[in-house]
Length: 325
Ligand SMILES: NC(=O)c1ccc[n+]([C@@H]2O[C@H](COP(=O)([O-])OP(=O)(O)OC[C@H]3O[C@@H](n4cnc5c(N)ncnc54)[C@H](OP(=O)(O)O)[C@@H]3O)[C@@H](O)[C@H]2O)c1
Image (cartoon, rainbow, N blue to C red; front, side, top):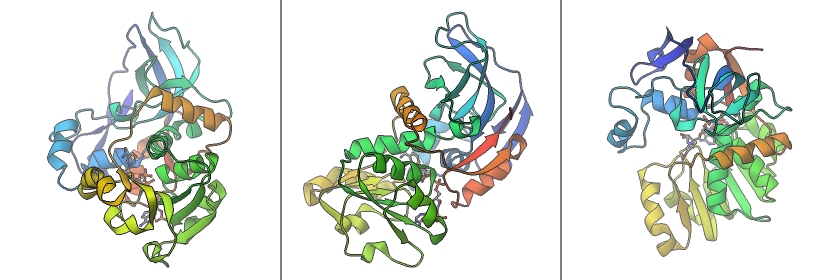
């Protein structure tokens, strides 16, 4: 099979198309012929070793010193089961599935084996392969942080970076939970974020949202441009600051923000649980969480997709059509 290997940390040019043996499923595994996958901000961060400042060494100890230990990137996929191990009970050949291996990666290839209980589910019938491949990364990250924030109906949330993969999912889930959403985005994406559920939109290029008089119960920061220290005056008493793209200062603020200001900072990696992926699939099936796809690329164009993700301008997801049906 063909697969893209990330042979060192660096720009999109470090990605190399190679021919490798197609894996065989173990007893409890399925082999999926991948129809679609994505290149997301997580893939681009790993490829470029773009860690929070001061965390470079820890990041490389975890992921690999000179390049990622798992050289085939790609956190999510949708495709068709083509083989099953002898103990597999949940799936059969021909099933259309989607999966979120997450940090285990390995989806930028024509095939991937997966344990049958490794966050793999039947593809919702109302979603195409491209759509099903795109819902897990942004969706589960958004769900993790909104659950930690315990966002309630009637609360006001400010979403900074509302047009990205995580931001667009936060807007939709917050809308479903009954919150009032103010989105911070550029004018180009105003119509998109309104269509997803934002009531108010602030164009960060023409207005400084930090200078507004408004206050919020929750701030979801996904753009990496604002810290708790700069934005805390926008939070109501008992407000929560979701530092989703956190650098070290916000990680430290988790320790002291409640005691000093009565406002919580929530940071750290989103948990990747099977239950979260299943919840995202339920919402996608019910039309509560709509996939937002910016561009699609062919499999051999994965380096071009990385270059686009690196611009920081993508809306929702960038999908790779691997084996289009
Ligand atoms: N903690 C975790 O576990 C976790 C999980 C997932 C992601 N993350 C992190 O969260 C961040 C967001 O991820 P993502 O996948 O959603 O990124 P993304 O899809 O690449 O975000 C791109 C979007 O960000 C918007 N944007 C850029 N600068 C902005 C600004 N100054 N103000 C408002 N919006 C701005 C862009 O809109 P415009 O073109 O309109 O500017 C674009 O639509 C990344 O840093 C990622 O590493 C963390």
